[in-house]
Image 1 (tube, rainbow, N blue to C red):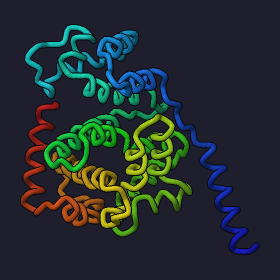
Image 2 (image 1 turned 90 degrees about the horizontal axis):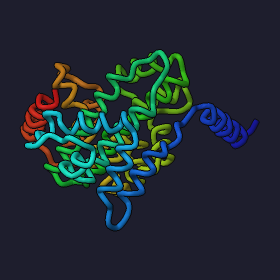
Image 3 (image 1 turned 90 degrees about the vertical axis):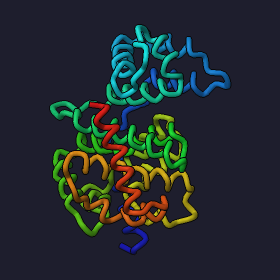
Length: 286
């Protein structure tokens, strides 16, 4: 077999493998929410009606709207009231997270910690994006929710994937995704990027999902700056979460932290200031 034949056979094998991985279709409810928000003049009544038609979604929105994190002066008593108090864009972001959480479940595997971490990362990235003005806040929030969405999909497909995650988290030299590729011929970044496109998420989010363990992209000026900003903010947000929970070191921060600081123009003291702000915010979310 020639090298070209070998490469073709390998690509075909990988394509065949990916076809066996179930990418959840975009929920119709999410498509409805996205369609309303994409109009020139979004109607809050239409958004409230779509949400109110789903009892579980309505309850989840009201619970979040009335949580200490938002600190609303008035309590939301109805879905329409929540949309009015929070604003359509914020409600759209919350709906995206709630719908994703409802849609992606794995039999016999609890994803509570996964979704809690994702929600915390999304809020942290929103805060950082607002503070640093390096990318739109809603884009940062969406990416924070979805950047690791390939993980539960691969947990469902490969019984040994949890072991792969453990090995990848312990790896000090190779890329996180290199460990996945060696064991499964794919990665959570590739699968997550594919799902983001399937669900109609912004192209910047899809590309940043693909690249978010490739810290060399932070120095690649041919990569869109908003994409690089998302990659930088997610590592900063994730390290802050680990620090918040008492983990002082992070292999991923060791691999990419210096590049993140250079890209964002942060000194060591400024990074610590970011962490203090974020930890105070996490306390409010409890």
